[in-house]
Length: 196
Image 1 (cartoon, one colour):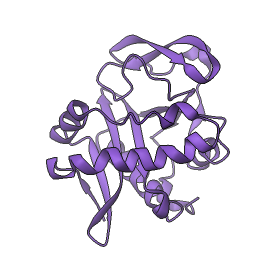
Image 2 (tube, one colour):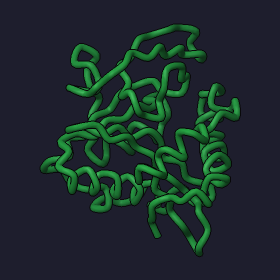
Image 3 (cartoon, rainbow, N blue to C red):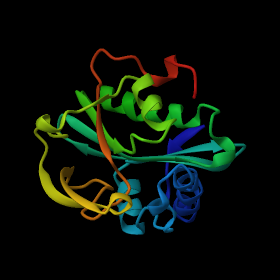
Image 4 (cartoon, rainbow, N blue to C red):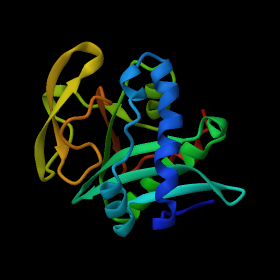
């Protein structure tokens, strides 16, 4: 069951994210094993603004998704699923819910950034219709943006990226490597695809 998160869910978010990040750390992203998770102030604000969705199995929260809402374009900040529930379509259902809400709101584009070198990650997003946004296009269209410095610890290099000003991805964040964009209008929702 999917539902909007409540303040009662706050203690569950970090452990779910950390457990999910362990899989990425094992796949070559040790920076995700640093224990950092969604900041409580970001989670509280996202809950208050109905931008954080949780998934329950047998009345237990096992996954969540957080997103930002900007006029005409939303940004998916995070999807986290407990490892023992991965592969059951829960992440796909969460992504489908975010896309459905974007469609209902008349949003044309949903963007995200993610590691594109993890074997299951990029193909999952591409399978549901996301495409890599060429660097020359930027990542976020006509959003109210601020520039955030992303320092890629794993490669010891720095690059500039445009980040939605109210997103989870905020200033210094070593966890993301590529931007993806999904054209919401006329696209197939993820629940029309088999879970990965």
